[in-house]
Image 1 (cartoon, one colour):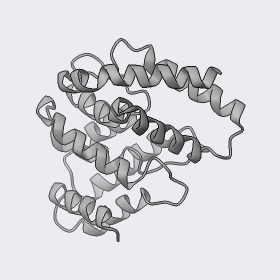
Image 2 (cartoon, one colour; image 1 turned 45 degrees about the horizontal axis):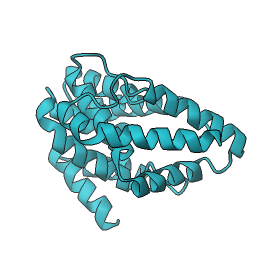
Image 3 (cartoon, one colour; image 1 turned 180 degrees about the horizontal axis):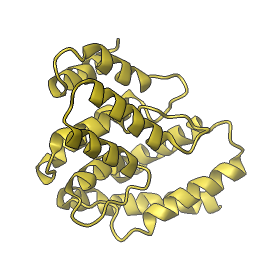
Length: 207
């Protein structure tokens, strides 16, 4: 197990009930699958760090952290139901650990929410989770280019014309939201650079 995976496992153990170390290792191991290029251990680590940064805005930070661990646990580039399948895995695992039903339901809801990253007004937990998942959009131009290249590599089996059309649709759906980031802290830090990065990639995709 890599140092990064060990650090993530330590975070899981701190969050989950005693005796769940093997389960946590299994979940974390999914992020090291060979077909992944962006949705990796690094993405999970960055996302959890962002959740920490935004934690004060959440109403149930444990639910948000569980949702972060599970949100890309199942990631197959040839399927459109990854979020739903990841949510099902979250339900099965948390119920097996004896988690409270309300926690299970909230984690499942949050995982599915990452499909569109469009939490409703007043959804504090959803805002924190979605903002944490999108912080990559607000990086430097070089960081964003590295992210975009990793996404393209994950879909390397898709012809360029189809990828460009699909990617542009995803980006436009994000760009058309009144706010990309819903928490005050993330909005202040990431909104402007994320808008610039999205606009630049959309121009490149249309060229």
